[in-house]
Length: 251
Image 1 (cartoon, helix red, strand yellow):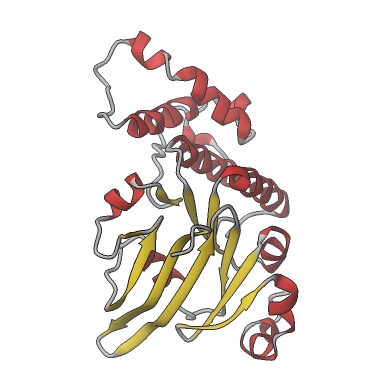
Image 2 (cartoon, rainbow, N blue to C red):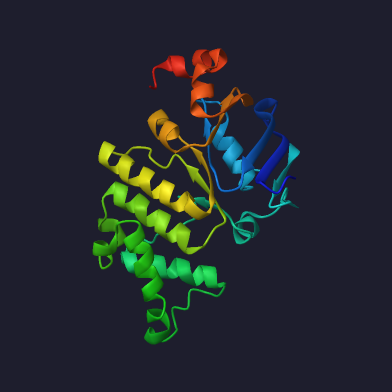
């Protein structure tokens, strides 16, 4: 695998009782880029994501991360190697404060248990980094609130903060702006761009304006197969993509 490629799949396939949800997907994600996975409903995007993090086991194919074959690895082991799927495994506890949520994520990164029995001084030592992360995602003024009290868009920002606390080398973002207001979309888009400054991001996203503004490379899936790949200008001009996806009026 070339050194500029951090994640690669070869012939990735998933069948469900004869139905092929993902078929021979060979994907290369370059290190330090934002790579978007798009396509119409039923294209296989979420199934592909589930295969990458082994929430689903591939029927066939191979997945390589940082030159290491991770096919068949447990999701927790994949996360420990630095490939983390945000919004799915982030540590957000609704009845703990915003600060406590990030602090727990920092404890996870340290590799120990949640340390609930440790002295307050030991836990407070993590507060400085936790507050830095909250400031980075625009939640500095919300540290004392319970997570359940946050508006939807701010909860997503907290999930990003807890994920960044794990110091992932690569982030997988599944529909990061789904169900958001225009203001929240802008805020989360800015956070994704900021998070990608020193790491790689692969995201499934329906909002094509977000995809156009953020992505270095776009892979279009249709009926479980790769239909096209390139930057937004190239992909948006592709006749097959226009027929399969752009023509649906998603903008």
